[in-house]
Image (tube, rainbow, N blue to C red):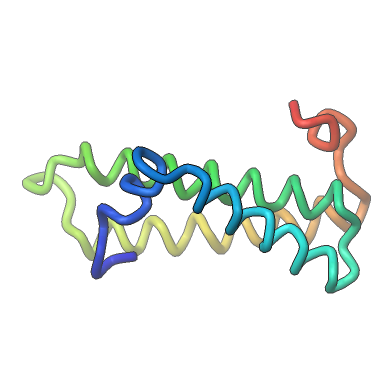
Amino acid sequence: SRRHPATFATLLRSRPTVLVTQVAHIVDDLANTGLDEAAAQVVVRTTVRYLMGTVLSEGAADRSVITQAELDELFGFGLRVLLAGFEDALGDGVPEAAADGR
């Protein structure tokens, strides 16, 4: 969260079981909306990787070069593209490599 930027990194470092439990609930929630489990897992895994990359890159960002507002704009853009990609990709089913966890 923007108000607590270290939360995600802290979850990864000290309490991975909390993160894993939350991810499992999200997969279940997506499956309950009608998305098959393989597709739900792909959506969650991809989104978590996007979030992890964002957190790591924002932590390393040189604030003299890029502002928080610019980082927020980039995050929002990336998230919109990611969601649009899910919509496009899932219309044709989950790619085989993604369904296998690769």
